[in-house]
Structure formats: C-alpha cells, structure tokens
Amino acid sequence: MHPQDLVRDHTVYSCVMGSRAFGLATDDSDTDRRGVFLAPAPLFWRFEKPPTHVDGPAEEQFSWELERFCELALRANPNVLECLHSPLVEHVTDTGRELLALRDAFLSRQAHDTFARYALGQRRKLDADIRTHGAPRWKHAMHLLRLLMSCRDLLRTGELTIDVGDQREPLLAVKRGERSWPQVEAWMNRLAAEAEDAAAHSPLPAGPDRERIEDFLFRTRRASALEAYAHDEVVQRVVRRVGTGQG
Image 1 (cartoon, rainbow, N blue to C red):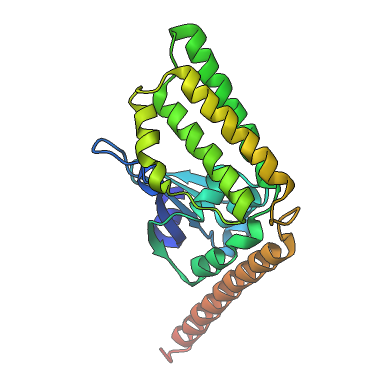
Image 2 (cartoon, rainbow, N blue to C red):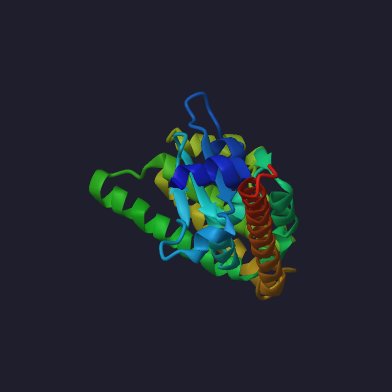
C-alpha cells in the first residue's frame, strides 16, 4: 500500500492548522492541513512496517499514524497537542471522535517543559537572525509570542485554546515589523515569566493519563485486527463455495 493511500483511505481525523486555526490568517496565508490515520493491523504483521507519518497527498498536508501521534501527544509535543484542539476540523470518524474525547488525558504540567523548550529553540533562532541580519524574522517572532501565550493560558486554566482572540491585531503588528525588537523581547520575557508562575499553581495533573490512551490504542488495534480477520473469513467462504460449484 502506498503511504499516501493510507492518508486517503484510513484518515480518522484531519484539521486545518497554522495561521488559519490560530486566528492570524491574512490574504496570503497558506492552508496547513494535519491529520491522523489508522494503519490497518495486518500491515504491522510484515517485516516492513507502515510509516509513522506521511507528507501529502495535498500541498501543506502532513499526517501521523495513530500510535505515533499518541506517543508525541503523551510527551506534550506542542504541534501535536494543538492539532487536537483546532477549531477547523475537516474530517472525523468514530475513532477520531474517540481520540478527540481524550484530549484532556494528554494535558499535564509537562506541557510547560516542552513548550518552554520549543520556545527557547525558536528564541535562539531569532537571536541568530538579529546577529546575522540586524533584525528577526518578524513572522517567527509573532508565532513565538502566540506559543508563549498558549502555554501560559493552558497552565492557568487547564484548557488549551489556540485561537488568539483579541490578541490578533497586536500579534499581526509584530508580524508587520511595527514593534521594535526590545518591545517584542520584553513581551516574550513577560509571557515566559507568567508561564513559569502559572506552572506552580496549575490545575493540570503532573503527567498525562497514559493508561486511558493506551486502552484506547489497544481497543482500536484489536478492532482493526478483528475486521481484517472477519474480511478474510468472508473471502475464504466465497472461495470454498466457488470451488465446490455452489457460488
């Protein structure tokens, strides 16, 4: 089976991400699509396993196999967690709905470490841009501010909201280069400090509910295997009937 066929035929959840999901889209914004596919159980019974992720088939489209997606979400990967909270859902199956119902099981105070680590990496890139070019890439600065806001609010409320709401215009002003770097830097530092303070009093649990997620994955894999077995039994019965002249 071609990897892109897994996306076409076995996607359980897909959504729009990026600026359109964050409430930061402008006329020239791309449409970034993210999704989760469930590889049929028999593909895992071969030496060559199904892919953990697939690019395409559409432009700006990326999908994860369900197990890989859950692994990353359990580690509080920012991109994956936010995918589960997109307000722009394009496709969802019963399995996808069950995955969405487990969103809270992935959330924990671990998000502070992973979001902060990701933010630090992006901040270093901005600092390198300033040293090399005299200015940061303002679009990247905007998205870093958005990420810090999302982290702070998640730790404060226990809920992950990715639409920036009334912060749209201040953030777009950063993207347009209408704020000085010292102003933006001070904003970043303030948000990071607020996230640090929120982490100490967060309503979130210390870690994700791994047992709930593992139970979901086990049941989903088992259902896929039983479906394959049932289909194989039907094929064998048809073959036997044809072979005995009963078809």
